[in-house]
Image (cartoon, rainbow, N blue to C red; front, top):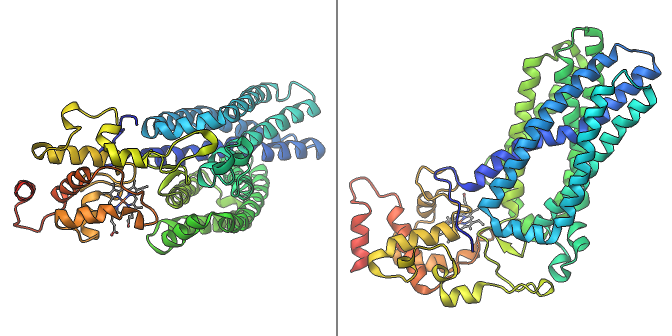
Length: 455
Ligand code: HEC
């Protein structure tokens, strides 16, 4: 076990969620925009409309700056955030997919080279050559999506890998193809959306109208296809994820935001298709922000349905490996932790707190909560991510005894891992949870409860 990266109030999971959702904007633009670009450039040459190149120049510059500065920065940001928040999960991914990432980086380098060459050779090399450079970029960047989707979908549905440990068994997992098709379709919608924004800044209104109308058709087609493949994706989910999807759709507004954003974008495509002159910068940027909200909620749904695992049926979100993974020679940790205690099993625990004693009960309990619960819960009552004090209230837990019993059955909720640790640790955690629980007005908080436990 590694040290815990606990982000007060916000929770480490939300840090990742914010960076990752933002990253989707530049990264999907990087993989999608050149298909539209090459399409328009081809038209410019075939129909002898050099004025279209004005759009090309602007669009490439936007891609270059937005994708390769903000995209790269947020990409590195994701790596940092996931590595500190879940080092063991990342270690598992790297041990399985280091060659996957290596291949992705090869295509990433091709992408970077191709876009610079494309930008600086516009109008300086013959048409065919320039189009070919554009196509190399388009295909190269899409292949990087082909690879990275294998690794992302693996975490949700490792499939046969759980038995065999084989690279391709995990890569071509049950949700791989639906996710790839969905992301590929959706990236065309994103390309359309950005093209409309860029077209809105063009001086030549005739070119702008032409681009906006074409881009909105791309947008509508991409969105419809993505919605269809989303159905396929739901159908391909593992049963446990399906069950959680049913629950997350029923409770909370998160999926509603994604659906509302999707509908809003679709309407926007129709509106600018009918009236291209409405496609100006401000409504365009607004549309991108709506897209961002939609992505954020769609990604949180993906996070929710993977619970309680970070790698489905292999590793819990709190980095504990519940079962043996024979093919990889990995031993399940549950038995050992239940015997030795989680405070012994984790290296980074202050020495005095490894054994539970009454004087330090609450401090030990807090460390256990940090290790086992903080991947999904914040500990503060004003926390953003399922704050534990509020959860205690929700579960109606008041006494230490009840809470201790509750912790013993944590895994009867399909989204929570089984508690790992000794009975004394369970009690320490229960005492800590009761101490942070909101107290009715007038009732003495904290201290009084501790006193009660000590007796
Ligand atoms: C893998 C993520 C995950 C981990 C780890 C996790 N929980 Fe939860 N927990 C959830 C989710 C999701 C919910 C449902 C939240 C909601 O209803 O809004 C939840 C709900 C709860 C509730 C309220 C249950 C109810 O009756 O509705 C309590 C209490 C709780 N968790 C305690 C804990 C404790 C204590 C730990 C650590 C030992 C823990 N959780 C670890 C994901 C997790």
